[in-house]
Image (cartoon, rainbow, N blue to C red; front, side):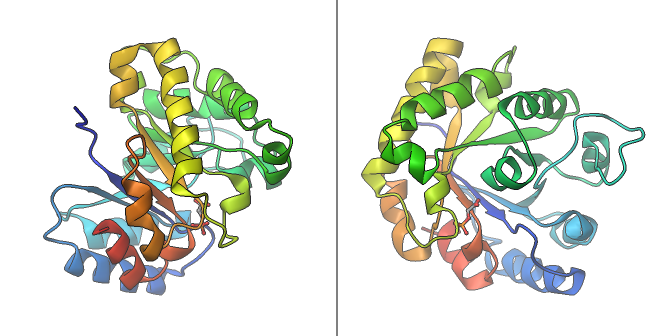
Length: 251
Ligand code: PGA
């Protein structure tokens, strides 16, 4: 029996000023207030987190950050700590997004450190994995994902393996308009869940939510969500427009 609550998460990336943030979250709050059976998450840029929290407090919309550093405080110019995110009301943090891996040198090892520190500070990590086009064409998809899961997601204890969120985002589908077919996505999601079961056991594998990300749009999402191992979406472009994001939440 599948008791996993669908999670629809908006990854705004480097978009929206404070004014634009207020406008978007105000609309989401008004138009999604009746939604009960899904978890709704917005992840604005750091500069908009505080104001977004102000607008969505006492609503069914949760707040997440797009990244963080793995130390609590100190001489790390330009970085943001888990403590700071927790302090302003973030519940989730995205870790190891492919753009962080590609442009900012994140590795499976740094992903692992950040995931650990997120848990230690009471944040739920959403850890991203996914293969590039070249890796897919060279039939390396499963070996790449396996490495990212085994190294990045190692060392979880207690309830952590159950409450972790994984996002499968094929790099070739992000921002390109090329969505993975529901079957392509499901194949990898099933693979991740099986692998996870080997590492953390059946219970954990049945509880962990695995989101799909990569050109999710209102017209392709319901088919994606019909797949048994897909538990939600990590949405970039389509999370920036209230109407689109609302449709996605109500898929
Ligand atoms: P996209 O981005 O929906 O714009 O493809 C998804 C993501 O990178 O999380």
